[in-house]
Structure formats: C-alpha cells, structure tokens
Length: 354
Image 1: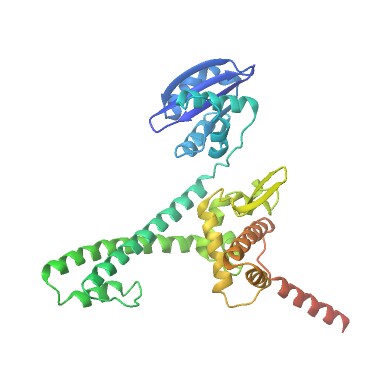
Image 2: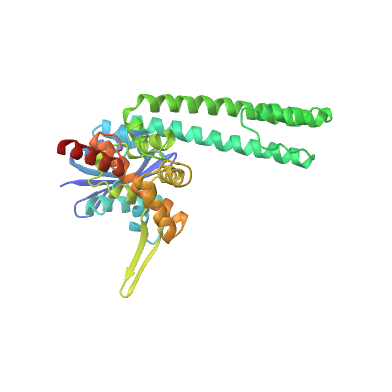
C-alpha cells in the first residue's frame, strides 16, 4: 500500500506526518529542517512513498532539490491553495498542518508549484539584489535632498553621476558639524551607488550573451530588465501548454465572482510572481507613453486608453506582452510587427505580378 507524506517546514524544525492510502496515520514526528535529517526519518518507508508534499516557502526550493536528488518524489504545493485546503481544521498547529498536507497528497487535491532551475534562481538573486540597491539608493538621495531643503538649499535637477559633487558644492560654506553629517551620508550613498552599478553592468552583460533575452528585446517597450525578469520567472516555456495562459499565471487577468444571478469581474488577481508582473506592466507603460515608433501593438493599447483609461490599457498590453514573449521563446524567432509583415507581403506579391 502506498504512503503519503506531509512536511510542514519551519526555520528550525519540520513536522512530519505519514499516512497510508486509507488515511490512517502511520507516523508523526519532528526533525531538523535539513535534507539528511528528513531522509533519516522517511528512509524506513522509502520504498512505499508515493508523494511527499511541502508548502511553498523560503526553504522549499532547497529542500525540494536536495530531497529529489536523494530519490524522494517531492511536490511543492501552492501556498494559497494549501491554506484554503487545511483551513477547515479546528486548531492551527504544525502537527495538524503536516497531517493536512499528507491527506492532500493522498487525495490528489493539490496545486503543484514549478520549482525553478538553478540558473533561474541565480538570475532572480541578481535581479532582487539590484532592485534592493536601487531602492536604497533612491531612499538615500531623497533623504539627503530633504536634509538640504531643511537648510534652505535646493538640489534642483541633477543626474546621478553629478549628485555628490552638487551636494558638496552646496554645503561647502556650512559649519563643520553639518558638513560631517552630510558627508557621512554621501559615503554610504557612494558605496550603494558603486554596488548598484556593478550589478547593473553584470545584468547587461548577461542579457547581451543570452539569445532569448535579445529576442525578447525586439518587442517594442521591452528592455533588458523586463527581458531577464520574464526569462527567470518563466524558466521553462514548455510548462505552459498555451501562451494565452501566461498572463493569467502572473496575475494579469480579472477576478471572476459568479454565483447564481451574480456575475462580477473585479480587479486583476495579482497571483504569481509579482516581479514579473511589475516588469511586464513597466514595459507596457513604456510602450504606450515613451516609445515613439508606431506599431500595431501600441495602436491597440491606445484604443483601449480612448474607451477606458491608461491603467486598464497598461494591464491589457502587459498581458499581451506575456503572450507574445512566450510565443517568441517557443518559436525561436524575433518579433515582427503585423504592419511590417503586411507591407512585406504586399511588396512580394507586387514583385511576383511584375
């Protein structure tokens, strides 16, 4: 008889529950959140284990990779779906959560999460580190601007490369204590700025060497950040059967609430990877508001602006960009605007007629 295992993972310990096909609990215990420790508990049941489930979380990718390598049939379950599935239990404890996960594995009522490859995880680390340094850099610059404004000094419009020189020019006549306070902030800001530039340059080099990212950048509005974010977020394009489901996967489709005579379309679901969704929306906004070259994709988005609003148009174009990028990835070709294709077809047809 097959056995099913639920793991409720926390930072230090993991609650383990093993049930059989009839739902009978065979073992309940705790072990350290370490692959070797977990394997030591599950090893006596190893030949009979059909599925091992754990909730998506901070340690789930690492445990999934290590335990899969050790030969266990691991499944990472989507956190929102799991929370709803085990919510009916009377008491919220690690032991009950592990039991609920084990029963989900037994019944097959779970939604698996795609565990990204090591390459995609490295790219996501690079993107998240760059994004964090950029936010801290903006925070530091705004804080320095605010400090100077309190002294009656105005920075004005200044680029990032000339920021420090402009600040030092403004404070050169101030008292030594004030100069020391602001100079310290400038030193911290310079360190963050150098780190941000290093990560940004590394990201650009990776995009230059990646043919998939270069193909994505043939789409108007899609830059290196959006291209690499989408590539790392999707990881494997073959896991989507249809390209039109990619936008829904990243939470760019409206919520639907239908019951009896009630049928309401709400805001977008905002499910999936928030960074990919943000990158797609930024690319869509760039296409609609900054890219000057005309294209059928931009014209389609501007028609939505006319009958609705800019925010709805940005979301709609972002959803379409997700479909286009996925299709380009699968087909292995660059983006070609529909109007350009029509013109080329007409020219070929005219040449054939001559």
